[in-house]
Image 1 (tube, rainbow, N blue to C red):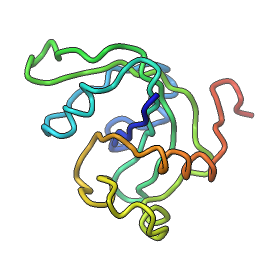
Image 2 (image 1 turned 45 degrees about the horizontal axis):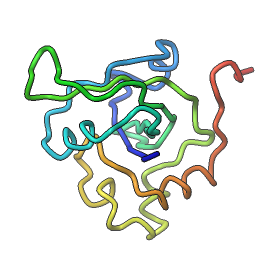
Image 3 (image 1 turned 45 degrees about the vertical axis):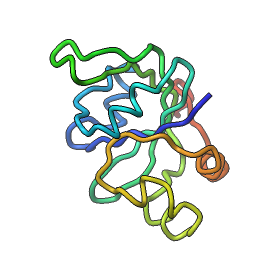
Amino acid sequence: MRYYLAKTDPGTYSAMQFRSDRRTVWDGVRNPQALRAIREMRPGDQVFIYHSGGDAAIVALATVISEPRADPKDSRLAIVDLEYTGDLVPPVTFQEIKKSGEFTDFALVRQSRLSTMEAPKTFARWVLKRTKLQKLGEWP
């Protein structure tokens, strides 16, 4: 299993909307490096959902549920299906990630505009140690 990070603008498509939808097609990615990450995803891989802008933070976790495929709207692009796994409580902010000093080589810190990227396993463990996964159906 591999880990990835996918950014979304909460004003466009928030984790709350994804939670409500339960499944989504991850599309709209145009950057060649980000497209490469999508093409490398496989069912069972985990994806950290990152709200960009304002209070940038990792807020949720999703699971890849399909093989990547060409976007039917533009065959040069790639898409993949994701299923919402749950919220990460508390969210892990970009400032926390930078302040840790442990991930200066991670694309999230180095290339802040990159929308989708593989996440190192050390980063995934670091995030998961700091959060509780609140799965669907566990909300009060």
